[in-house]
Image 1 (cartoon, rainbow, N blue to C red):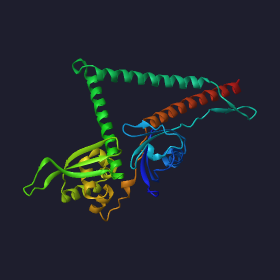
Image 2 (cartoon, one colour; image 1 turned 90 degrees about the vertical axis):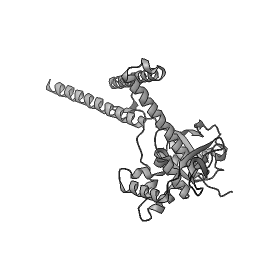
Image 3 (tube, rainbow, N blue to C red; image 1 turned 90 degrees about the horizontal axis):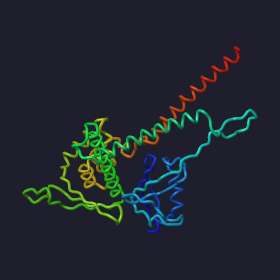
Image 4 (cartoon, helix red, strand yellow; image 1 turned 60 degrees about the vertical axis):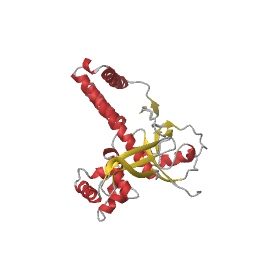
Length: 315
């Protein structure tokens, strides 16, 4: 058991996911943090907080605490990273670097941030009213907002379940049994199956699905792979979210989703299955918008300064 190696999924709170491979259950928390910082998604920023379990809870282990005391093989860890602190500085006439305390431009940025904050508070107030008020007392806009909130919540729940399914498969904590929910053929063969899985000792999950015949599954896999618009749906993480039935049928027919798909597409390039598309988080998008607004303010200030210099020279 001394050579046992684990594989963990790592989700960064600011966006992005990685897989941490070949990590022993006996490594300390401090050693784990060193490995986490080395991942591409961490960008070498210090680890601020680690969360594990479902729902995720903060790990309270001290630096010498062992990984096996707060996580298990195949589990997903949520990692919060310390943001880089940057000070705005200006060159003085003597060439020395001095810290800027406050400028008119800073006031403009503060006003812009305040406006964004007021917008968020207004949206939060509307959302609370849409959720707590009876439907017959809401206007069309509020009813649509409530429906959007419900759809977003359901999508988030499916993402969480998809993560649990894939983590259980990676940790080999999956068991298949016959299911009586869908009946059987004349020869007694069941039409469905039951899958039981877990990612820790805290909770077990159970699902029932109809069996997809091999010929039908082969046609489905080849159809999805042949269309660039749907090819990404074959990625294990996406399948676990959008089609649990297809996901579990593939796992049931092979050791994992990738090997099962390969059996239907032996000559195809399946390297895309392990590639993860990095989508920008809401925070990153907000930061980009803030940078764009700041750049516009800087450009306006530069133009004003140029006009003043021209007037001064002409006078």
